Length: 354
Image: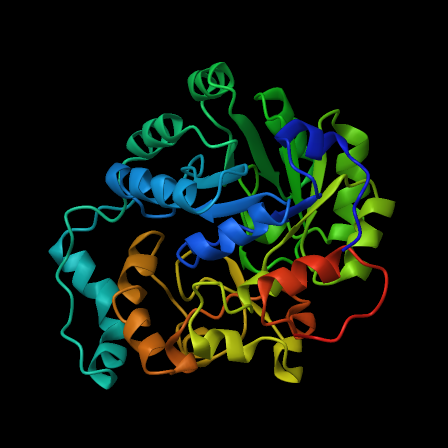
């Protein structure tokens, strides 16, 4: 494996290689996070939907697996987006278009929960208690009090921007590094200053502009799946890269076998932007759900509802009823082992897929 020269990002985090694992909300695994950290990169673990107890347990599991730096990732409330608390009538209305999927899988129709997500304040407090090397945030600006508390504990803050304006705002809010997330990236579009549909800037345009606009280290994300993408990102001003879909395709990820098998194929060259699965705009492979759900409930109701049947679909290998998150370079996700992929990202020579 090639050893990269230190960059401002590797020095900031105390890591050896400028490779960051994309944080998968709902698809993170302790094993994959630890592998990336052990190889010298920054492993990241997505805590979407985790309460304080589960956050503490996850941090403990990661520390039992590796003593290297890792990041914990949190979703912040989107400014101006009101968290819906539908009554029974509204809940039934949101559930109605999805009842057929529960029926197909032989599952009971769910009852309305008391809460769709744990309080973000509870999550933030638990993350501070866990004291990871870094906390990465998506969908917004961290509260100044949290930024100060994190810095007092030696925790680095990594923000995520889909526009130059978001990057500038994140730096002003105290971010120590910024992920410039191009529209090619898989999963949710994490825009927060303007609607996601108005913030679809490709990485080749976004990255050099962000690098020019901020003074903190910039990490490139979106469509990077091999060493060619890594080299291009560095040419455009990045000092590290974040790789998601290519790692999602490896056996160490928590993605289902049906999801992994759909990546790295000619069919995975085609992706769609959809709100069908969660109520927020996200990029993934097309399937029945993206084609049939035209009027999803708002987030997080839709995400909670589809989350009641997606695990069963995954167990049965039914990719038509899954959230097949994938970026636009998904067809390049050909490695099935995370260590082999990590090495391949850092070498200029072509490597046979593992």
